Image (cartoon, rainbow, N blue to C red; front, side, top):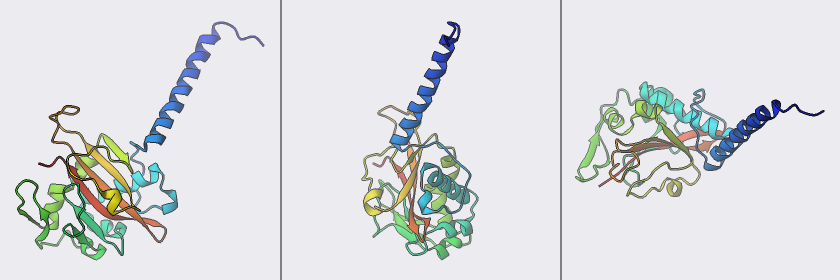
Length: 217
């Protein structure tokens, strides 16, 4: 049957929309980026670690931190490896602080001052309680509203070594990126990122590393 001429432009427009959607989907799949928050879950099966599941787990962890729900956070922490806290981009297992799941569960009442590393620039020892460290280096509220996230990819890096893939080669991670006040300019030095890394444990993904990244002097 012959298509009437008035229908031809409509069909061409619909065809263009479909092609555009397919191309956009292919780009996101190729780059590994996702902006999907998903329905938060505490733990996801390791055989369902697509962008959606991994990102939903990372958002769930951020919500636990925002709400100071350290008992819930301890339940997603790796039972054997614990969780490493890295204040500046480069992971150093010799100096970065590692806490077990049992220790994390007590963070809300733990007033102990720990050595977390040294401050960038001054080199002074970073002596903080868990609550103080979280306030300074784990901005969960801001990350929940991050404009860009990377799934198993770094959104941005500065002048420090980014070695999460080397130190935790089996980890899957989500990078929550917050652009600086002068985004896309050479003077944009106040950006920051928070990376949550997970490894498989008995068929589930468990938190092993939290990295705070930013430009360092």
